[in-house]
Structure formats: C-alpha cells, structure tokens
Length: 125
Image (cartoon, helix red, strand yellow):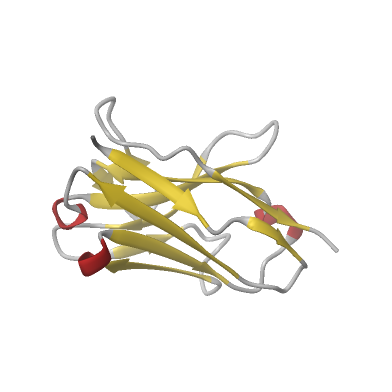
C-alpha cells in the first residue's frame, strides 16, 4: 500500500524549531521528487520546499529560505523538513507529496501523485 505519513507537528513558540517527518511506504522515495506544502485557514495551499530527484536540487519558498531545511534519508525512506526560527505566519497544516516537477518558483503535482494526511503546526506564545 502506497502511503506518506507526516509527523512532528505541534505547538511551538515563535523563534522555536520543529522537525517534520514524511515517512513513505509502498514505494522508494529515491525515484521521486518530494515536496512540502502548507495550507493555513482561509489561504491557498503553497509550496514550501521541494527536493528534486534528478539532480538533487533543492528549492525553498522565499518566505522560508534560510530558516527551513529539507533533507532525505534513503535508508529510512523518509523526507524531513527542519523548521527553525518559526514565525506565527508559519502556522498551517503541512503536507508532503511526491512532485512531478520542482522549479525555483512552483512545484507541479499531478493527479496520480501521493499525498500525506498532513500535520498541524501551530506557532504561538
């Protein structure tokens, strides 16, 4: 069964850190580009970071550049998103997904891409 399961969300104070995990099963992440997306209430879903498969290129949204770090652990078939210096505006449900194409400005997903169920990140004092 193909599955992506996010974990690691929670409540953190502004300036704090969280590490999100995206554990894949039923397929090998090394054959896929993987992206992190987020959606806050009343807002559209936005791409946060993307790790391309072909050349390992990494992309970040301007709003998280220099604060978030995406990484892969092939042995664990897991992708991580380290989030530092969190701000209240980072609060959202975070999703990981396989991605058809990562670019510097947008990440393209197709109907047959896999999505996780999401993990809530709350940034509040």
